[in-house]
Image (cartoon, rainbow, N blue to C red; front, side, top):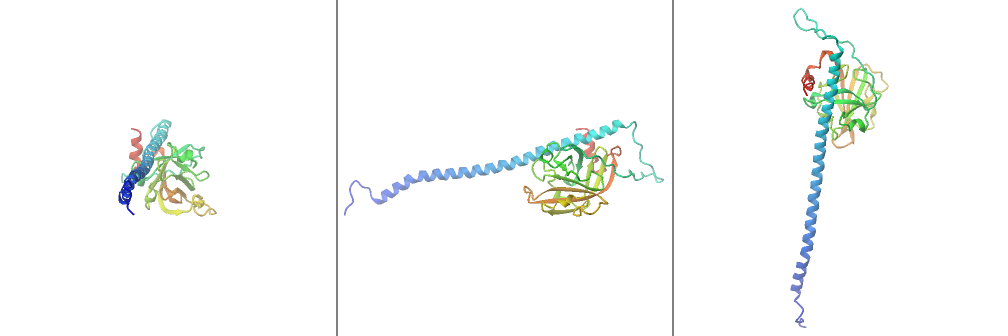
Length: 275
């Protein structure tokens, strides 16, 4: 049977159908590409926002630490009638090592009150953050502190465990480089009374449930402490709370505010007076 004169051949019909479908397929493809591009831009923005937020908050926390540190130094200067006498001279003409006796231990402050400044040269030559009482969001997410002291753990210089916590990422990331600490690294803590020098001893990774890391003797809550520890805690890995990274140190020395800061952090402490 012959085809009707008014009916196009089959191949013509197929071509027409393909032409009619292409615009739809083209629109779907364009929409897909736009969605993918939008997703990439969203993730890029979130990454930039996280990095930028960290940088801004870290700067605010450092500024707050410098302010409280300088306040303690100024208060100490104004409270003394005259400059402290210099260190004794030995027969060889060299300064004798200063002995400041037992470390002064301050009273535990109220919640969210800043009472110490932490200096860790391994985290950067200008690293300094204030430490406040408590580990809630009002402290760890604060632009004034960022480092929290575990309530009921010891104070700086006290026999037992001065334990603190901070974020590794977001809200200033005060413990961002905790994994880079090396044996013997100095960890300095400044309070209104003076400076406490701890030396890093060990690093470990534990489950979030292992709370005995902040015991007076870490991992041995039943043992009476005889040393003065510092414990830094943070989450691990970055951007995760799957486990905890723990850094331990032991007190090596202390010196009152009147003696000036330890040499390794003297530049940053002295520069803050000019800021």
